Length: 75
Image 1 (cartoon, helix red, strand yellow):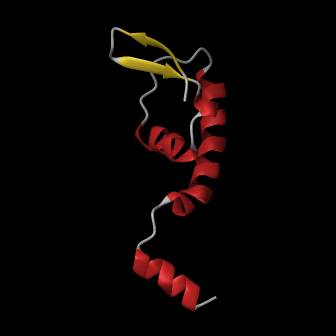
Image 2 (tube, one colour; image 1 turned 180 degrees about the vertical axis):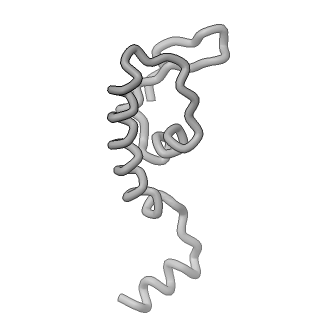
């Protein structure tokens, strides 16, 4: 992850495309839009990102030992 700048130590500006999906998912679920030059374009882009995240979310969660053993036994 690359931090581009910090504004008064309240905000970190990062390149979204360079961070792992589990962090992207957290941003998508808990984001607060501060500024968008074209809000409609941003909404369209965010909807695509949310679709991708909804497909990936369950794969990003940690599995318990019992869950892993159950998966091995059923394969």
